[in-house]
Length: 329
Image (cartoon, helix red, strand yellow):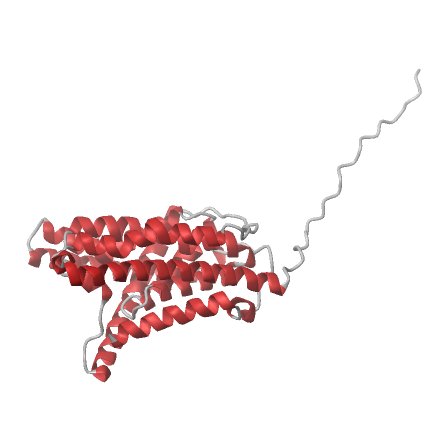
């Protein structure tokens, strides 16, 4: 009988259950990252404002009748952003490396519907606040506060230009810039840093009190969706839905029916959305512990690293200055 010889299998390499986070980025690198992002967004705003405003000023002098065409106004305001502003932004951020993103989570359809309804309801509440605030400013100013949307999309504008630029193109490009680009550069610092910074610059980018406050609330939801899912599919869908209901639905209803009927249908829909949104917000709040945001790769930076740099300071100063200008104009 052969002597028994035990066989030894090599043990699997031990992998600890806890992996310590990587060392924090140096504060100087964090400031440089936010500064580069700030300067990129500064270039985006300058290109859009200079080219758009320049075209309008030239048209006023040479062909003022062009400014009665909504298609031309929308092209003047948005094409400089899409065709030149975003390429300039990408060039500024080209050498800024992306950081490791948090682990993506799966979003259930029911969760998306609840968040969409809650976001719509919150946006309309903030819209009422904006209307009241602008009414107060108008009284103090002694004149109406300019609403840029009413200037480029006056009542009776073609519903098709609204659908193309506001409902379709604006969500696609804004989600790419304010959610996806910022996600790749900042999401590694965690949900709070990325979501708040994204929502803040998105709100200020609108440079008017008619949109700024509901844009901030909506920006929180859109950035939260992007951070949670690791992509902008859900945020684009939500942004499209909000813009369709807020800007596209009434012109479409008016184009294919009487004005009174359109207003009645639209008003009833808003009431239903508001009620459903309230219950959705309460439901989401009661289940908030079931939806935990994934942890970031690095510890959140200090606020002075985020805001104490040249790019962010100049960006906030320009956006604040443009907002004040729109109020006083």
